[in-house]
Image (cartoon, rainbow, N blue to C red):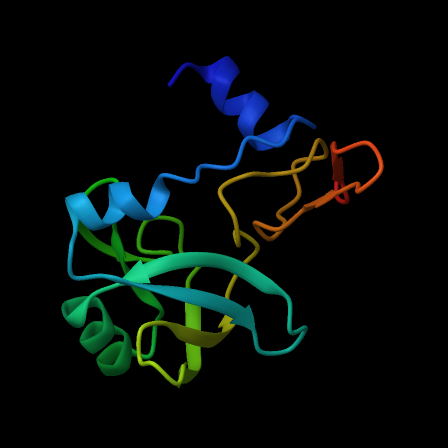
Length: 141
C-alpha cells in the first residue's frame, strides 16, 4: 500500500472499513481469535488484535500482552522493539469462548503506531463517525 493510501486510511475523514479483514485473517491464520485491549486505568479501548494458543500462553507467562500478527503470520510481542509494552492485568473470556478482552497498563507512550500532528501518542480509536456527514472526526489531531 502506498504511503498516501496509508495516510488517507489512518488520517483521512472518509470511512473505509475493511469488511474482509476477518476472512483474510482466518485464511492466513485459521487458529486465531480477536482480543480487545483495554487500558485498565482509563477504560479506553486501545486496539483490537488477534491471539492464538501460542500468543495466549506467552501473554500469561510473561504478563506482557502478546498477539499473533495476521499480516506477518508471527508472534507479536507488543513493545518488543519500541519498549512501549502493555503490562497484562486481566484476561476476560466471552460466553462463547471465541474472543478475549485484555486489560493492560500501557508502558511508555507508544500505544498506537500512529501519532497526532504534534507527534504525541494516542490510542488506535482516535476518530469518531459523524452520523450527519458520514465523515470521520479526528478527536486527537
